[in-house]
Amino acid sequence: MQTITRKSLLYKTNVEYGDYCINHVLGCSHGCLYPCYAYLLKKRTGSVKDYKEWTEPKIVGNAIELLKKEVKKHNNLKSKSVHLCFTTDPFMYKQPEIISLTEDILAYLIVYTDVQECTILTKGVYTITGLPIADHFKYGITLVSLNEDFRKKYEPGASPLKDRIEALYYMSRAGAKTWISIEPYPTPNIIEQDINEILDAVKFVNKIVFGRMNYNSLAAGYEEFYKEQAKKVSEFCLKNGIECYIKKGMV
Ligand code: SF4
Image 1: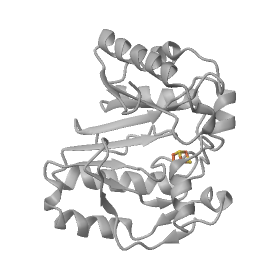
Image 2: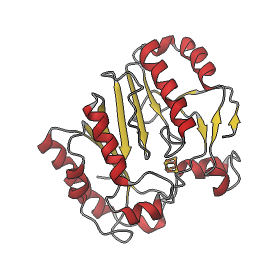
Image 3: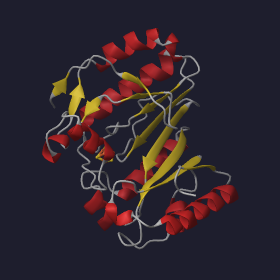
Image 4: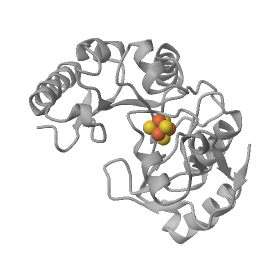
């Protein structure tokens, strides 16, 4: 796998997932076609020239070196939260070098820093317990459908849904806090499905985040639909004692 060198690794964020984020890879072989916000951003800023280049990820070769330096500058991350990743996937499917680097980063954060919470979100699978599982580590998957044909069309390089859910369950059994992101949830003109079936498949999780499609013109004008789905998610979470986060613009 090709490597790149970066000047910094820890970025401050204003979004709900964390105070800081880490994106230790450029590109993503999952190649989602919702479309992927990260791809649109990287293409606009000239970091990648096209979809093909985006789906051939490059690893940040000096990631650990940067992390060690930057953590010190930020008071060892005391009382802060860190999220992996916003513009790539930390457990990219069938990418062992990326998975290994993510493990190293997480292990460093969990063991050597005072980070309050460390979250990951993936469309891959992670079932190796090479990581110290701590209370403040949260493993999450994106899950917007249970339909494998939909997954093959919109998340062509990502893991099969069954494997993704199984890995989530495995991490939950291993002691990690688990969560799912149902975002970007597709509208019925893209796929007809019952959101309660998705919720039922993961009712062991600790938290559910729900959000709409924002960058697909097919999803325009579905405000009522999204309100109804958000209500179903909230009710399900309430009934099952699951923490719920409905993204802005849904209700
Ligand atoms: S997994 Fe995330 S970063 Fe990767 S292509 Fe899909 S949406 Fe983009």
